[in-house]
View 1 (cartoon, rainbow, N blue to C red):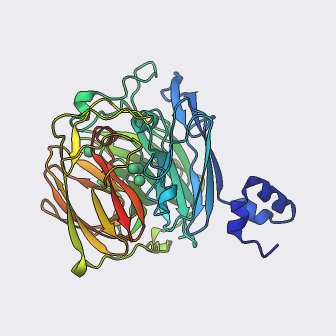
View 2 (view 1 turned 90 degrees about the horizontal axis):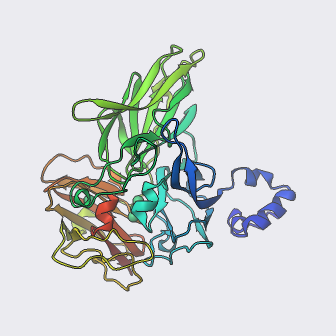
View 3 (view 1 turned 45 degrees about the horizontal axis):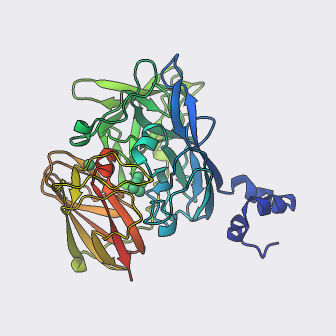
Length: 461
Ligand code: C2O
Ligand code: CU
Ligand code: CU
């Protein structure tokens, strides 16, 4: 039995797993990263005293589950579509094989109602990630299909508890029912904001945490639109990673700017005194909103933030800046004409935005032309130029990049997959084109993505 690798075992599917666990491989099964998702339409309570109808989730029983993986270990995810429309799942931030990336027609056919698609990959990086559909994306995400993924480091840094926080809004009326998921005039500007802020699908949830313990808060902003500043109030707390990549040194958990798709890992020292409350707040122009509370429980375990081991950096290759070719991308208003083409993945019916003067035609079978073709293994500087009056969180699939410089502000050299490009900003980012395939490249304000601000980069040998 030892001749069968863990990979083969997992590739064998559930039946084989059962056979072998009966034969004594129970330990493997205990943390075998084999997940099942059921894309489902559900009714669920979000606003107290109401039941929201026609939500969408990755589970028939409630919010999308948190998926846990181990860095470098093969995992399988079987996705069954029980919706009455097509879908597909994308694993945001995972640098995995193109065929597993979950983009309709670019990497796979949409998963039709009643079908199951099996994803398999070994996440190369540790950290906080998230997953969401890439088909009828605005509607499916707006109705609830955004979930958090955790990839654990091989060695635990020393936390007492790990708490993923799925931060997002819903557009609900006072009766708890969905109102129009977007407004065209907002889609042509900053995007349509939600009306109800939630964490893990709850309004202002309260988490009881052991007094004096160390907790890893995993903030994932899975909202379709909101760019915001977040802060931990009432405790010692430090940001240790942004977008799954450890910071060279921790920063205070204040004014953490996150746009749709971005994540922040925060090390929280729960106060020593029982009953003390800590708040996660969203800072607004003139006030702030409490998103979640953490209350100290029991006698203090007297831990200290300095007891944590630093997170090891992820194995993202360093670009060779001396030999990097510069490729320019202009994010702009849409040139005249062309409403998006009809697609089984839906359209919003408008085209407002473009990349390099070309609006994404819609999620259609193609073939479509890439915005640029990159040579496998070479280093590139992407010069991102925003000539619009709105900010755009620019996201690239399959490859992480490092922030180099901006004409508007000083940038820390963060490694990321999503960078907020300010209005009229030009930002240089660099990467090694080390992952072959066609990689979606788009704004993560989903209304912008779905009204033209999307395209893809091709990496080939
Ligand atoms: Cu998180 Cu193409 O998306
Ligand atoms: Cu992505
Ligand atoms: Cu945008």
